[in-house]
Length: 130
Image 1 (tube, helix red, strand yellow):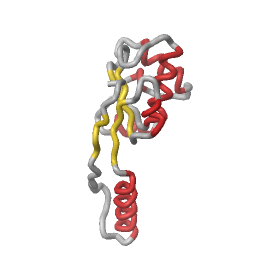
Image 2: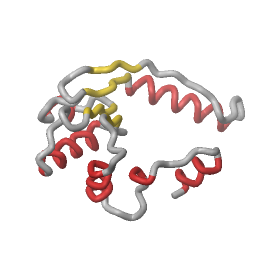
Image 3: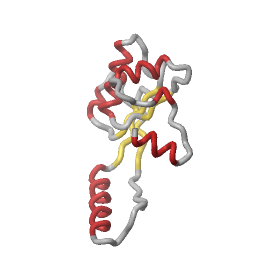
């Protein structure tokens, strides 16, 4: 709810089909698929969640990417072995850890304040879901 409140405070509205409320993930995703505003693509927070969505869609008799194109994040092994293999965004996790640690230390020592920007190069790894 905090995320929705922050969007509203910033003058943006969070689309109703994407609100999480207290429903299970499967119920929410099922309602998204049945919505008139169903997206034709999803960028999912990580490859594990993306692989679970692919399995759920298979249970519902829906095919990826024919029904919805799916892209994960992190280039995890589960995305490489999912059926179909998951298109994902990969990045150097060690560099992410270094940047996050550096930012945390800078904040502790008051060398920087939020917001700040750090950039980690990312690569689209094209497989079969998008």
